[in-house]
Length: 479
Image (cartoon, rainbow, N blue to C red; front, side, top):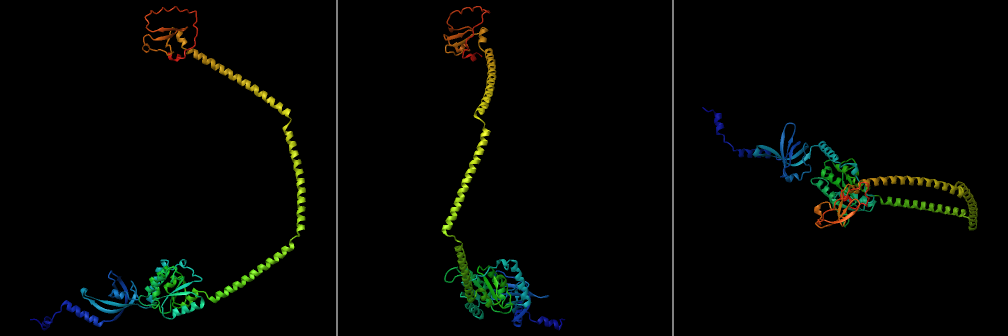
């Protein structure tokens, strides 16, 4: 048997998921229509849609949060990872994932300590990049022709700057009005600095020689725009020297580190930017007086020197007489000098004459040397004649030993054409050729194959020696 309790549960009407989700959504949004939640930013991400998603967490809990793209662009404080913030908005649910989340409409830094922590972290980051190096700072122009001022166009700051500049030195002032706090103020300040730098050097609105970025005093939150990276980077990149004058003397912002000079107040910035006209006039008057006194002293000293020189000048007649005396002394010295030169030359000539000796003595010496050389030459010629004679005899013996006459004496004969060309082989001579036969004692003419019986060879008389004839010019052909 079912109990009464089970009957009651069974008869209770059910809800769909959509109905339950809608009921939860209405309950949460009605109960928490506006809340302010403090926590640490974590899991920060910004997708291409431009919405900002992150989680607020404490020691134990986590709250999903979202900033729609339109709201994110208007925030004065952008969430950063690890930043302690207070987020204002409303709670809602997301039925697709059965979770609730905070729709953030505003972000605040949770206390001055968190702001200072964020400020110090940003200062270290920019300092590591070299944006605060002293070597990057440039000197200010001594007499700027125009000054650009970036500040709020309304308020006491711009009036104080203009009033102080008018009192000190005549200079043209260009004011670029911006919001100095609140959403979008940092972008406006950076754009103003960049805009002044982009102006042409000449023209109706020319680039100023100096920039002043100024704001009155306030809390750290009020001055936070001058701590934003976009402002600091614009100040560091400025080609125009820049003076920062933000807050009072005790206030310090990051733009003060990046600027070329920090002024304690906006009024002090105007004083640092321009000299005092009265001081310049007084200085010029003092310098003019000193210059006139110095010139007077120089003129007086020159006059005294001239008078002294006049007293030291001689009369022309006395000056001529002194020069004449100098000429006389020089002429006397010249005469004595010539005599001494002549005496010295005579002495040197006598010494040279003694060293030269008499011509007859030199002639005898030369004759004696010539005789010795002649004897040596005769001996040398005789030796050379003997040597050449021996060489000639030796060559004659060698020639005689190799002469073709020796061959003819052994019964040979030399057959040549009438032109003198030797015939070595029978085939070389045609029939009936006229030839010359050279015997040891004489030469005979003959015709080859003439049909005559050759005469008998005479008996050789060994007692008679053959007469030598001149060797034929073609004797080498025999060998």
